[in-house]
Amino acid sequence: MKYRRSRRQSVKYLLAAGTFVALAGMLINPRDLLGAKAPDDPCQSAVKSKVTLSRDRLAQLLTVSEGDRKDKVRSILKEPYCTLAIEVRSGVKSDREAYPLAFDPQTWLIVLYEGNEYRGYAFSFRKS
Image (cartoon, rainbow, N blue to C red; front, top):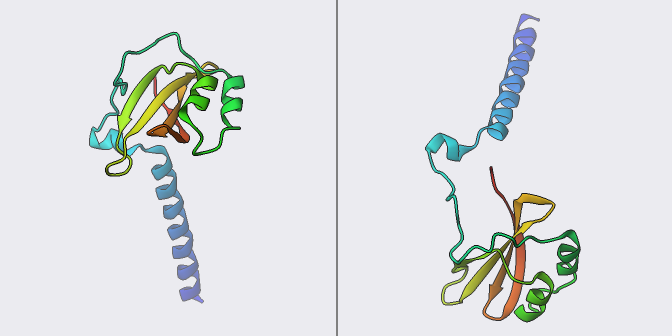
């Protein structure tokens, strides 16, 4: 009987410790611990500070298929806040364009192009 109680008790402690570690992992940002900071300004072109992206234009972007022409996307989104250069695949010229959301300026839409083709988008959540 005594063996079973101690085993049950150790399972409870193990579950409690695991829960604590999981919560700590969700709350702690490893970049803060290591001293790595995200760049303050990732833009590599002139910033157009008045540019923001509305909900309507964001919704229109969702109708564009991957592989469509860059011109089609740009006709919807208009001029970007700034551009970000990146090499996604070796030997393929890739460009990213950033658009802060008008309804949440700390969130940016990042649009990826390879050459003249639209390749997709992602959201970037910036800390203030």
